[in-house]
Image 1 (cartoon, rainbow, N blue to C red):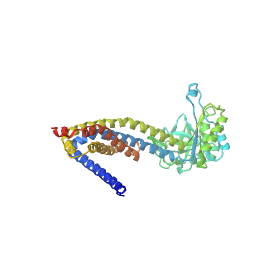
Image 2 (cartoon, rainbow, N blue to C red):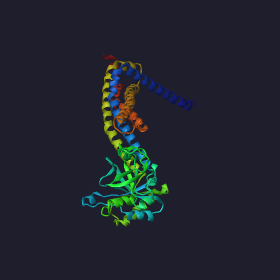
Image 3 (cartoon, rainbow, N blue to C red):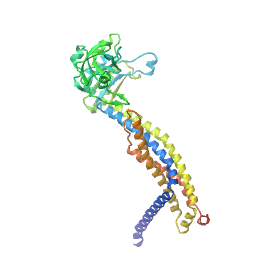
Image 4 (spheres, rainbow, N blue to C red):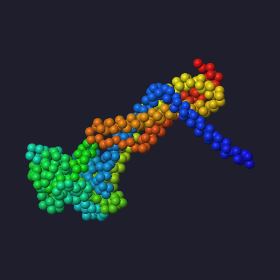
Length: 425
C-alpha cells in the first residue's frame, strides 16, 4: 500500500523541483542581463534588427492588403464582371479578343438568377474632357442606368443616366468628384455644359467620392450613356466592352459563373482544349487573389529578412561562450555543491532564450514604429497593420534562435569538470 501511495508524492516533488529550478534559472538569467546591461543590449542587437525588419515589412504589406480588400469588398460580394482576355499567343499574331453587344444580349436573356446587367466601355476620345481652358485626364465611361446598382456607386448630386438618356443618345454626363475638381467646376455644377470628345454635354449629376487606391483616385471619371458613347466612337471603332451584373443569390455565384462561361464559350466557338478569350471575375475572387499574392510576398520577404535573425543568434552564441569562460569558477562551485549537469545546461539555455526573446519584443515595438513612420512618409499609403500571428511568430522564432545558438555554450558549461572549474583563474 505504501508503494502505491508514494508514487504521486514523488512525482509531485519532481514537478515542484523542476518548477523551482526553472524559476531559479530565470532569476539568474535576468540578474546576469541586468549586471551587464550594455553587453546584453549589444548581444540582442542582431535579434532586434532582424525582428524589427520583419515586423516593419509585414505591417506595411498587411496594411496595404487590408486597404485594397476593403476597397474591393465595397463593390459588393454579389457583383460579377466579364471582360475580354487576350492571350500572349493571340497578341503575338495581332489578334485582340473583344466582347460585343451580342455577348451582352446572350448573358442578359439566357442566364437566370442575375440582375442589373449593364455594358461598360472605356472610351479614348480625341479632345478628352474640357471645361473652357481646363482639362482633365478623367476616364470616359459609357454605360447604362444599371451601372450604379451593379457598381454600388450612386450620385451625390442630381441623378444618374436613365434608359431614356441611353435610348435617345442624349448628350448628358455624370462626373466623378476628382474630374469635377480638375475641371474647376463649382461644388454644384448641375446644368453646366462641358466638352467630351469635342462635343457639348450637359452635367446632370456628380457621383459620391470613393477615395483612392494605390495612390490613384477612384473618382477621376465621367459617365455618359452607352449608346451615346458608341455614336461618338463611330461605326468603324466599335469599342471593347465589359459586362457588369449582380447575382440574385450569393450562394449561386459559382453556378452563375459556370453558366456564363459555358454560354460564351459556345458563342465564341472555343474548342474543348482551347482557353477562354474572356474572364469572369467576382469581387470575392479578386480579393482572394490579392490575399493569396500578398501572403506569398509576405512569406518570401519575411524569410529573406528573417535570415538576419541567424546573425543575431551567432552574436548570442559568442557572448554566451564568453560568459561561460567568465563564470567557470561559479559553475565549479555550483557543481561542487551538488548542482546536476542538467541544471547547468538549463541555466545557460534559458539565459540565451531570455536574451533572444527580450530582443524580439523590443524588435516588435521598433518594427511597428518604423512601419508607422514609413507609411506616413509614402504619399497615400494606408496605415500599417501588425497581425497577431506576426507577433507570436517573431517572439517564438526569437526564442528558437536563442535556444539553438545557446546549445553549444550550455553544453560546454555543463560538461566542465568540477575540479578543473574550481582551479580556473
